[in-house]
Image (cartoon, rainbow, N blue to C red):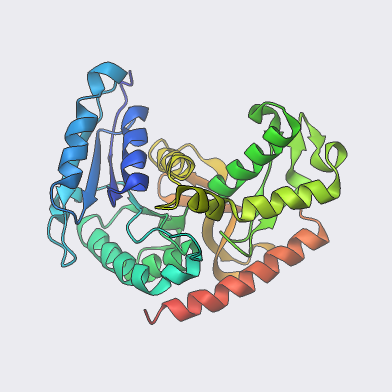
Length: 320
């Protein structure tokens, strides 16, 4: 049990992704309070009651609070003074849908949430997980008017986890012996970084054929769609919630750990003025700094290409 529980985290959206994120955050036992909100009346309260009843069994003391909210901003009082807010609200993908198909409807939802968060928790760090991820992160920053360091998105942690798992299962080795990295963006412009991928300390290229690596990169890029196609209703949430929860924990514990996130890039890698998947030090106050690593020429070219693709889409979002 933790004796240094402090702070408050709100998870907006009590679907599978949000509720699983809230459960993970509660079980960490590092927060005083986890608030779970949803627009479906009674749902977050019911889930919170259920999670609180698991506390004696799992041995954690973090309190879970459920709050029904409205699009007009009702119910957000329960979230007031949050240190971290994880935004999962929005429609999930259906089979055959791209992340971009969700753009317009989710833009309205995320804009409303960001405005309400800014009103009730003016010092919060916002972590966006709603799709399409890069665009929603940019939109949330605009809507909240928060400093860009306090708004970032979850993608790289999930994508690297998928890549790592793909490599480990293909080679039949423990996931702990594999290290991978993806930058760029969540989806089509994801940039794998082979120079940062290792198996037992050996470069990935030394233990796996180039065409096989390419195959796993493609599988990673389509990792979400692969799950969606199998589930037929809804999208992935166990791995995504693990990723979001880790990021929220890095903020509240001020860990300063370097993790791949969708962060505001302003000059790093020769790229400016865009939210992009990069490595960043995460702690109290959000993104402490973007961490640049030595990339190969082709990796850097891929990252710059991703930046321009994402930049064009983020420019479209400001009018939504």
